[in-house]
Image 1 (spheres, rainbow, N blue to C red):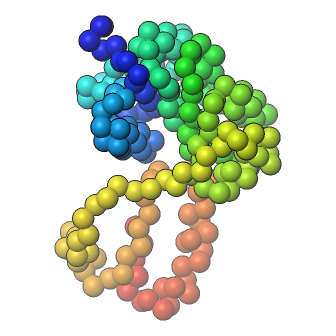
Image 2: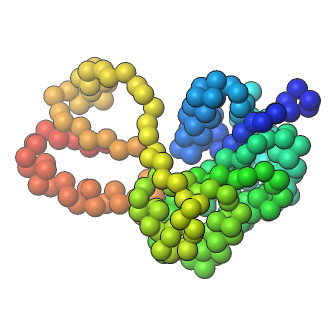
Image 3: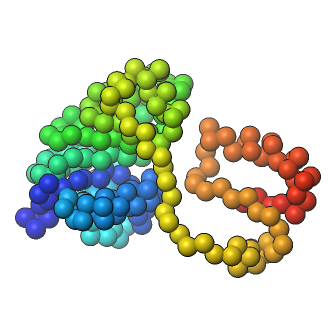
Amino acid sequence: MADDKLQDGIAFVSTYPPRQCGIGTFTRSLSSACSEHLNDRLRSMVVALDDPEEDYDYPDIVKHELDQRARVDYVEAAEFINFSNVRAVSLQHEFGIFGGDDGSYVLDMLRELRCPVITTLHTVLDEPTAGQREVMDELIVLSQRLVVMSHKGVKFLTDIYDAPQEKIDFIPHGVEQLPLVEPDLYKGQFDMDGREVILTFGLLSPGKGIEHMLQALPPVVEQYPNLCYI
């Protein structure tokens, strides 16, 4: 255990690859960018939210796993982080990845932590249920900083949740830098040669507004008869 103990490190609490989750992929990129930017002056580790029904072969950066549905695991994770002497915790928050009603188990962990918590909010609801509002209110209190990825998220936090403006940071989501390639090289793999293609990414769920894009497509299709969307 001594070899794993971090001095002045950052602990990322999130899902993590190979678990298939967009937030996990985001966390992998974020932790890698932090290590690269800081030239390893602050080492990173991950506390992975685990689905016990799956057997994941995590990379070495994952130092602790917690069963997302087991309440006691959240307190044990806090104890592990406290022992690891990290400088800060980066919590990736989405209601659905934590156990308990409206993901409330994560609060058990935050109450026990002895270091600052920086919470990245991947969803800020404008019409929360009573339970979601209760979780968000305490999450805001227990977090030293709140990161959102849209200006609307900033507005929701201040207008709906009464979050202190000085706690909030707007940081755009960003994308990984990938080499530009000729799209026709890939269109042929999907029998899309000679067609214009619209892509979206991420998991489909209610509230993402994809239906509005689909409803708006008919006049676009008239202008681009070879249009296809995936």
